[in-house]
Amino acid sequence: MAEGNYREYLQKDIVKVKKYFYVLRPILACEWIRETNTMAPMEFQHLLNSQLTDQIIKKEVENLLKRKTSAEEIKEEPKNTILNNFIEERIIF
Image 1 (tube, rainbow, N blue to C red):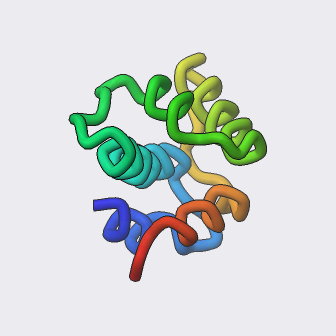
Image 2 (cartoon, rainbow, N blue to C red):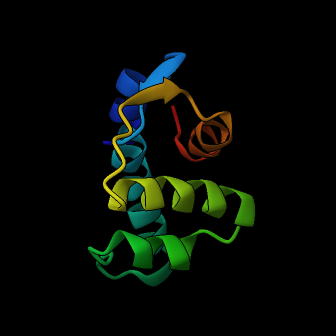
């Protein structure tokens, strides 16, 4: 799921920002399952807090979350190379 969404939506120069969540959720859920051998929580913030230890990546994701939850319209913008690099490190192609 993460790999397909990444390939389809996040490798362009201009991306739909909400697509980052479509890729990050399955990555973080897989890491949760691998670590705990239990179902991943549905709440994204819980996954984020438990699975992301890199504060730079976490700050980038939290910034997107704030914008999303404050109803700020975030349609398309240049891809976030910090998040793209993080995603690429975790997806096995």
